[in-house]
Amino acid sequence: NAGVTQTPKFQVLKTGQSMTLQCAQDMNHNSMYWYRQDPGMGLRLIYYSASEGTTDKGEVPNGYNVSRLNKREFSLRLESAAPSQTSVYFCAISDQGEYTEAFFGQGTRLTVV
Amino acid sequence: SQKIEQNSEALNIQEGKTATLTCNYTNYSPAYLQWYRQDPGRGPVFLLLIRENEKEKRKERLKVTFDTTLKQSLFHITASQPADSATYLCALGQGGKLIFGQGTELSVKP
Image (cartoon, rainbow over all chains, first blue to last red; front, side, top):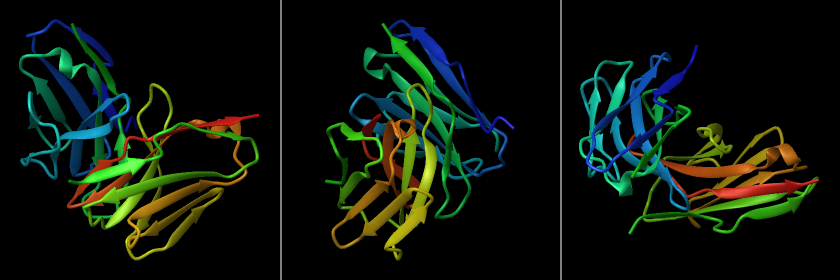
């Protein structure tokens, strides 16, 4: 079992280009999340999906869109990349309900030049 | 405004000592609090969860306390080892979301 798989692992974009970060899970968990991590800032929530068919904004949603394609997959799209979106992006999953731990993917390191 | 703050400075300790990391929060009412470990280039890995009605939780050499009056959690690693060197993140659970602090880097010297 891979748990949470993110693709790609690394990406360099030019300002204004678009791309989609993919996240897939094989743990049958309901909730999926996208975070970004910047030095000294910790993990900041971009968007999350409590279940298939629902998505909600987190702390820093501007410049991003998401799609919960099915229970397994949750994608993050940058329509017009900006240098401020240079970051490491993590997808996470958790089971529904309170008191559940989150499982993280290995991250996508994105550089926008 | 809502804030989660962890020790801002890196923590350097000697092998065998107890490491104590702090997580303070303001303007949150979390149902629970979690601690994660993150190694360079990797995603965070879950360590412990403590609920709002629990004062203390232990797992092997790890101990977490949760004081909802002080709005603070302490994370202790006893008999620390160089392999414990990593960044440790606290996270609050509220409304189905996990909100993270910025992390504290721990370095254990032999």
